[in-house]
Image (cartoon, rainbow, N blue to C red; front, side, top):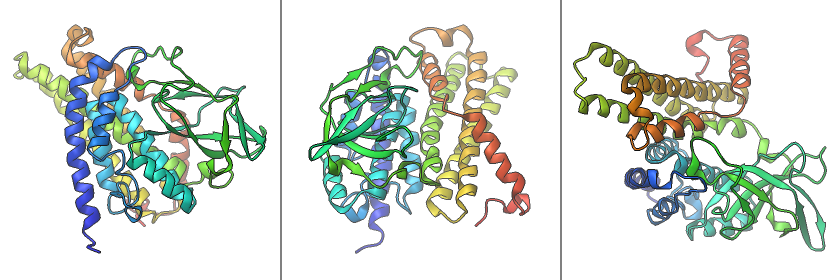
Length: 379
């Protein structure tokens, strides 16, 4: 086998993502409404081979995300997020699901589910649920009976292979299941009234009464939370967010140029600060992707680095939003301006869970590290 083949395939994935991103950016405003979803963009990803690309190389896929392709996955997620953060959110969940199948699936599950990805099925990972009424499972004949809901499920009604977590009883560790769904099945998008990410089809799925076969169970109890993969995987959504930060930055600097304000030293100073923020976020994402792929640090050290990376991207995004809105002024808040939707989507997507805990746990790891500062993150 030509050892360069995975690299060639990954390189093609980056080129495909660049083309898909351009098309998604052209349609993003059309999809920006309650209940919206970038169906055409997902079809473009499938036609370009990006829906199947995360399937491992050994299983016949492009191995996007496998070493040495982790950097290529970071570029792909960034580019897709640049075109549409809603599309980027959907695609990141798809990649996450296929990586979990690759890590925990048995040979039959991998063969069957990777074939589904090759045939264009959209995967998603749905873990969030309300304090009461979360997803449970019980024995039912030769299979399992589901009861309860998942909330904040992006791609609801469009994801046809949903990786969900469920418990037999509240005190049990969760199991992963792959639930096969039809388009439009059991999705309720009515509660998603966010100011941004309106095209992500984020909603509630009620699985009550649905029967699944025993081979829907993926891995062992609590595999979903195995570290460092669970927390370390946060670099992927940070890569998508980075694309959104870059899109806001470009909308801002093009406005400054077209408005003839490029000679204003205050405008230039803000643009310079924004450029620093963008490039800082890029370095954090690329390094985090490599740290996770190399897996050469202790798990707690990997998690700490990724937590810092996701917070660095958040900080960069907030800085760029503030600088851009100050530079552009009221026009940037008017519908139809290139900055308006991009700002709403980015501000919404930057709100990821438990940022304070991510910061303090990373800081505690840094505090306890015996190495000098320059060696903390070295293998």
